[in-house]
Every structure is written in structure tokens, then in C-alpha cells.
Length: 444
Image (cartoon, rainbow, N blue to C red; front, side):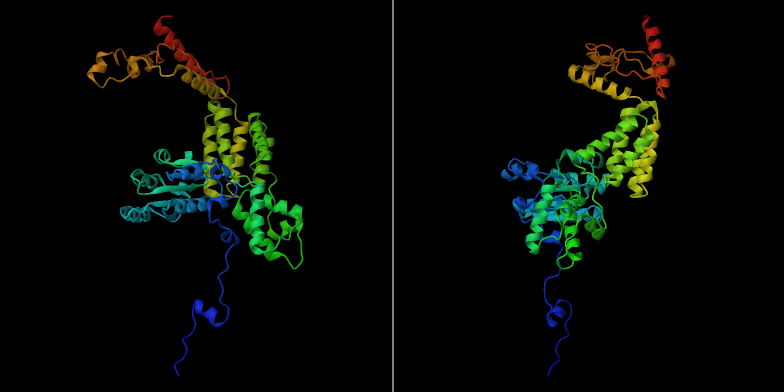
């Protein structure tokens, strides 16, 4: 009698009478099967949402999904491919290079020849460098792919302008408490049991998720695993079980804006200790450190400006240092930047000057610059007086011609008025020096 083959792989479980599906994470079990099941993004998927309107026309252009983790970016991309009958291809910028992209593009071209379009979803698209981002442009341009890129970082800073000009940016919002509660109820329906939490602990779990639906479901799984028969956790026991503390404030609500306002005003008021206190509170509450880094950069340009040009360099360096080191080591770089900007001399002269220049530019409309400072690459333009009378400043005494550069109909304007503080004291001396040369040249 021939021997029975030895059971291996999946057959091993069948031979032992243990055949069953592999365990699936709760987030995977609850992954929406249609766009109507996606929670928390009504501004995109509601009756008047941006994506709803696109789908109504059966026309989908390239998109960039910008938002925090766990808000449905990947799920929505996959469901959009289903809704538009496009072939769905997914890659991650973390694990892909130019060679991988070429293979994906070549496959998409072959599909296109058979009449099948491709929706290419690129997770973490901001991780691609400029050359890699450039490679998307021709295949977006000729329709080989419909690109959907997902990013947690501001696309304006992380993606190249030509790519952004070919794609529409859609913002995914952190899930609010109602949306996360909806996810938890769905989880309870699927698991056919209630979360063993009292009302305060349930609210605490929702805050712990911090707008991340995937995190909420992971926390729910941890609770079910930890609970003994008929045990119910209160808020303190929940924090002990999951080893996580609820954020002190909801980052999408008033607490977030109140604390960032307090941090900014403490820096503006040169109160270094208060500024450090609010920085520490926000970091302790789970605020995104790169958001804080961007705000510190903003403080450097808005409230210090050229009174201390080093402030912007140090704030930007702190952002890069955090990006390189991560938490918690990188947080010290943010603290150092806060100390620097809080103790630096203050000036909003650049902020005020730029605001006035913008208002004047809008009022002036399409006034042409004076002809003497315009180039004259053709004979006709030379005949019309373009570049006539232009003086090359480096050929003038003191390398300063003193010409008028404003449109004639507008006349000279003064926007920038530096104070007698910090480095702007030196800038004021320069401006006064050039003003004197200008007066001497004009004879007035």
C-alpha cells in the first residue's frame, strides 16, 4: 500500500483538523468595499463632495491625497479604481526606485494598447526625489496612468511644481470622534461583542486614536485581547492595558489652536520660558513635531525677519534635524530653535512691507515696468524704446545708478521701513545711504 504523502503548508492544518482562514487584523476586516462605507471624509465623498462630482462625470484626473495616517487614502484610491474600471496598481515610494517605476509604466502602456487604463497609487509619494517625481510627468501627460499620490506632508513643500500642476490636491481630514465611534460600532458588529469599556474609557480610547481610524481599530483589538471574562475597563485601566495615554487635547479642535497661538505669542513677546512650556505641552500631547517645526519657521520670518537673519536658518535647521533624528532626540532641536527665536530681536517690518507690496500689486493690476528696464531681444522692441536709457549699475559710481524701477503710472513707493533693532539697524543705514545717492543723482 503506497504511503500517504506528508502534509505540508496549508495541508498540514487540514490533516490536523485545524483548517481555517488565517487571522485578519480588524482594520482589514472592516476595510470598506464601496465608497459610501468610507467614514469621516464627507467633504470628498458626500453628495456634493469633490470625488462624488468627479465620479458623476466618469472622469478621473490625477490626484494627490494629503492627510494624516489612517484617514482612508489607500482605501479610497482602490475604490476609485473599481468605480472607474481602471486597473489598480499600488507601489510605495519607500521601497521603489526608478527601475521599478519604469516597469510599472511599461506595463501600463501595454494595458493602454488593449484599452485598459491604469490607476497608479503611490504611497508616501513625497519620499521620491525630484528626478523620480519628474519621471511621472510624461505618463501623466499622455494618459498612460492616472496617478493618485498619498502624502502626510504638505505637497507644496514636498512635491515638484510640474507634478502639482498636473494633479489636484485633495485634503483628507483626521477622523472626528463621531467617525471613530462609527468604526468602533462596526467592529463590535463584526466581532459580535461589545468593547469591555465604560463610557469614560470608550471616550478615552477615541481620543487615543487621535483621528486615525486604523489606530482606533488596533486599540480595540488590544482591549479585546487583554480583557478577562466579564471584565470592564475604566479610563485608568485602559491606559494601563494599552500603555498609551490619551492626548491632552484634540489636535483638530480648540485645544490645538489655543496652544499654538500661546506658543507663537510667547515667542513674539520674547518670553522664552513660556514658549518652552507650550512647546513641551504640545509635544507631550502628541502634536506632530514637523507641524511645530513649520510654525517655528513661520515665527522666524513673521516676527523676527531681518532683525536677525540667523533665526530663519536656525529654525529651518531644527526642522531638518528633527526630520533626520526623529523622536525623541529631534525634539531637542525644536526646543533650541524656540529658545533662539524667543530671545532674538523682534521685527515685523518684512511682514508689513510684503503685505503692503501685495496690496499695491493687486491695485496696480497689469501696469508694465518702465521700458528702460525691459529687455529688447527684437528690432521692433528696440524701435519701441525697450531697454533705451538703461544704466548698468555695476558701471555706475558706487555700483548704484539710482534709476526708477517702478511703473511710471505708479510712481515710487516705500513699503519697507526697518526699525532701529538688531541687524535691521544696519539695513536702515544702507537704505539711507542709497536714498542719499538717489537724491544726489537727481539733484533734489
